[in-house]
Length: 207
Image (cartoon, one colour):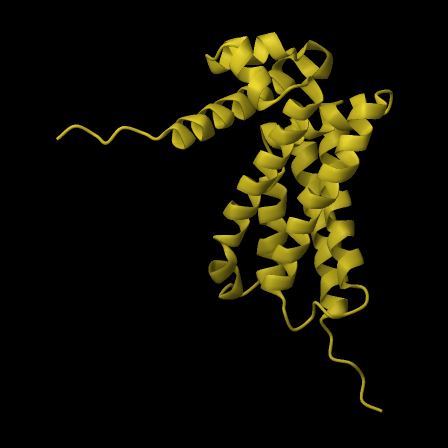
């Protein structure tokens, strides 16, 4: 039997995904300055008119791409919740997952936009909206993993600190490209983050 024909909505959604994936590829390969809407359309295999229909400006395109990958990253994390809850070291394993989720194109593309937004007010305004959405998904993941401790007044700060540690180590590593040094710095950071979360998970002292 022939496969059922896709609806117009399905074709449109697929085209959007191709454009968003192509945008990430271009950001990683060419940087923000070299990521043009024409180049993205060519890589996605769509016409320039189709690209403009879905994403009228370059800023719309790049920030939508980051939001798209952040949502995909959240799906990957949430799929690991049951495994992590059953782990003998749920915090350590969750931190390792956070580290692994920041590998690859999504983080590289995001950094490109952070740097570019310093001198681009329009992009900065868009990133100010997108960034909280991306980070809040990781906060929700932390709450789902450790529901008994998420009400602690320092819990949110600890999650943000973990993200800052991961991002800082990765950005610094781009200067040396030394994998052994990168692994050692992350293992050190992870060890101290485990101590931080362990302190938050201690039962409150009885009065």
